[in-house]
Image (cartoon, rainbow, N blue to C red; front, side, top):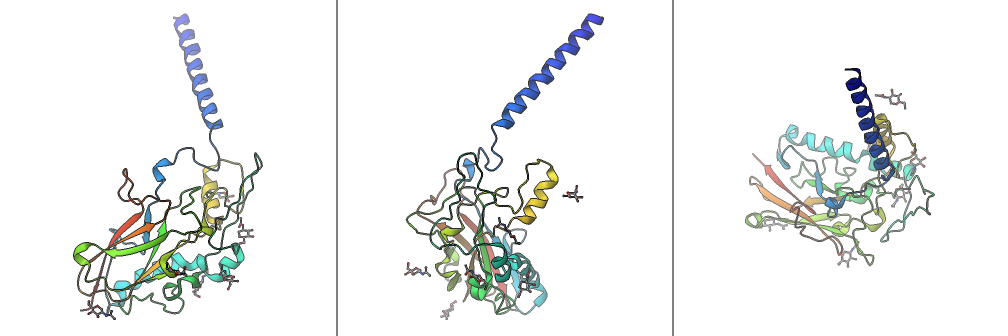
Length: 273
Ligand SMILES: *[C@@H]1O[C@H](CO)[C@@H](O)[C@H](O)[C@H]1NC(C)=O
Ligand SMILES: *[C@@H]1O[C@H](CO)[C@@H](O)[C@H](O)[C@H]1NC(C)=O
Ligand SMILES: *[C@@H]1O[C@H](CO)[C@@H](O)[C@H](O)[C@H]1NC(C)=O
Ligand SMILES: *[C@@H]1O[C@H](CO)[C@@H](O)[C@H](O)[C@H]1NC(C)=O
Ligand SMILES: *[C@@H]1O[C@H](CO)[C@@H](O)[C@H](O)[C@H]1NC(C)=O
Ligand SMILES: *[C@@H]1O[C@H](CO)[C@@H](O)[C@H](O)[C@H]1NC(C)=O
């Protein structure tokens, strides 16, 4: 009986030891700053703001309360982009080229700096001149962002990727003219590559305490570049299914594994009475 107990004690201690050793070796191979595996994200996803539950923007033009929440979402989302904030936190970078901040060997060049994306760049969709972002006039603005992919360089030869929006076939006549801000709907190359939350944070710490990720994310100065699209003459009282795509000379348009990569679709409907 004693022998059996002893056996199990030794046996389980041994198993625990093997487990710890494996874990330790695994952790050694992980890079703090860059995920080891992220190939699924080679083509980034896109998202819109404001975004309802089902990627729908539906409202009645004459009912303030039906679009006011969209305006609030945009106000909150764009607050960190105020020019004064950007000037305080971020660098004025050289446009149309990547903002490369390499590490030299083992020495981390951290924290990484981030580039200014001024709210005023969004012009008619900045919410500064037109406080309702066009919702009141029935010419709403929708913001588009690319999901962050660490290390991605979307574009080459100084050509920035750009957003292009259109209607699904049956709605082609109802979408009307679309304006893009910044002009041509480009995501300037200077906002890439993104080095990750940890590298781009204001303070770097080497602790792995969960609480840290929260505090770090609030200190990150990186402002994702945005493209605003404004629907100038969209038909009222009808559903318009819009699809926006990213166009770039390095991002493949159709990813075989994920047909939602590099594009976002949403429904827009403005009722008048
Ligand atoms: C940003 O600017 C808007 C409009 O001028 C202002 O209402 C808002 O309080 C500002 N937000 C911050 C965080 O500075
Ligand atoms: C952003 O706005 C600030 C304040 O007006 C200005 O100093 C800065 O040059 C602007 N940055 C860019 C990239 O336009
Ligand atoms: C972040 O912004 C703060 C000012 O709010 C600035 O002191 C700091 O240097 C910035 N850090 C980085 C990495 O850009
Ligand atoms: C927009 O695109 C056109 C044609 O491709 C180009 O001539 C123009 O310089 C671009 N404008 C900006 C601000 O990049
Ligand atoms: C997170 O850490 C800060 C100190 O950096 C501490 O004041 C705070 O109470 C912690 N929050 C939680 C939820 O542990
Ligand atoms: C707006 O769209 C309607 C069709 O929906 C068209 O008849 C009209 O000419 C357009 N107006 C402008 C200014 O493009």
